[in-house]
Amino acid sequence: MYQLRPKPLAADVRASFLQKLEAWAQEFGGSWVPVKDDSQVLYFKGDAPQSALLALQQWPEVIAVVSENAPPFTVSEIANKRVVVQEAMFGAGAASIIAGPCSVEDYDSMLSIAQKLSNLGVRALRAGAFKPRTSPYAFQGLEEKGLEILSAVSKENGMAVVTEVLDPRDIEIVSQHAHMLQIGSRNMSNSALLKEVGQAGMPVLLKRGMASTIKEFLYAAEYVAVGGCEDILLCERGLRHFDPEVRNILDLSAVAILKQKTGLPVIVDPSHGTGRADIVPSMMCAAAAAGADGFLVEVHDKPQEAWSDANQAMSVDNFAQTLPRLDAVLSAFEKTFNPLLTK
Ligand code: PEP
Ligand code: MN
Image (cartoon, rainbow, N blue to C red; front, side, top):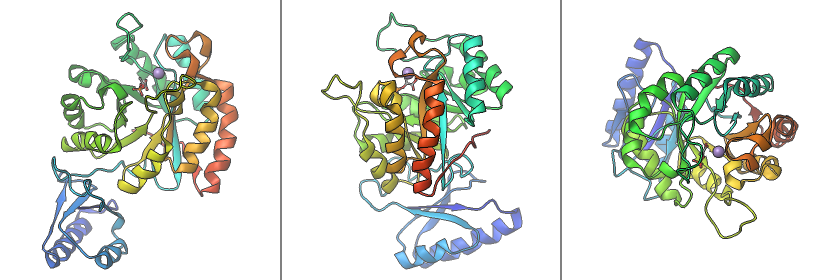
């Protein structure tokens, strides 16, 4: 199975391009399958020689051909679908940052954090309104009120909202306020939620389960893809392990492996990935060197007063000081910090 991303084409150019593709596919006894009728992503079902794929890459209408040839990921056993996030969101040669507090707490603190992050070039604001807490007695999030705060604050600052959805019944309301739906670590294996979220017509940020293999992670992404979602971001957020020195152990090898195995953008969350604000900057730089396409980080105005995950929240100042370091690492890999993430 191969995934192909054509350029945005005028209707008549697209029609003749599709005809040309069809003729190409027939030569190898295969066929092209768009995810949706007007999709910017096509899948080739069949076998084509490497030389033919390389030639396809040279067509002027084509952005990229991504091949998947490492079983068991070759062909989705679920729906023969593979996915890609729009170039504009996490394009080649750029890395984006999604930042904000763990939870939405109140309007004033959310606004203050958003303003400061926006001034630093961050275009995507994160914060949980529905919180997946380990303890039922811990703060569960402001729910709908939190969503309203998030969307008001993001509009004021021209930022996109990335927030978690915990329950299929909340997808509609969360979609009204968010630009990207987050599926958290604890829900990565919730196939019912994954299927529903895939049909929401929204980009999806999928976090790796805290004890999930890469294979399980990719299958979860396929569940989301089955619904027709083309915009999936994979997020490594650390794994359960034995050393209490860190909350989780950040698996940066997963970044390199996921980049090899999929055409999907891979981002890293070193906040949950370590649980320690003091080492988040180093892990962001390491993730950049490992090939991450972006970062999800927890940043708070007053980290010690955060209602959840206080130990891992960076102060705005620390975050600001990290950006030049990160930029230096990114530029060594000929990447830039890309503030692009708009609806
Ligand atoms: C979060 O990003 O708010 C979160 C709860 O993370 P995770 O699902 O990775 O624990
Ligand atoms: Mn958190």
